[in-house]
Image (cartoon, rainbow, N blue to C red):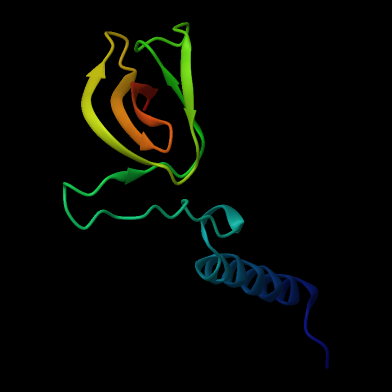
Amino acid sequence: MGSSPPLLAAWRWIALLGFALVAPAALPAGGAEWRAPELRRRQSSREPLLSPVPQVLRCAPEHQAPVISEASAGEPLRVLRAWVQPGGERWLQVQLEGPAGSRRGWLAG
């Protein structure tokens, strides 16, 4: 009349295993959706870059170098050159055009 306990236990394991194999396919990796911040793409190489976050402008490509000024988020900047330290850290020399005039400095990048 009823199913035997070992057969019922086997069907439960099969159902659990089937669910465990199929359900994660519908979930994003890590269990949550993660998106990189959207950056504005340049239409040409002459168009300036826009910094998505405030940046500190230094007088030399070193973290200990004095701060010249701060570039606010969305402020256009033009990359003059890139430099990579022997340890692999990348720095960009940039020029900012703003109401205070033209400023040049280094950004950790």
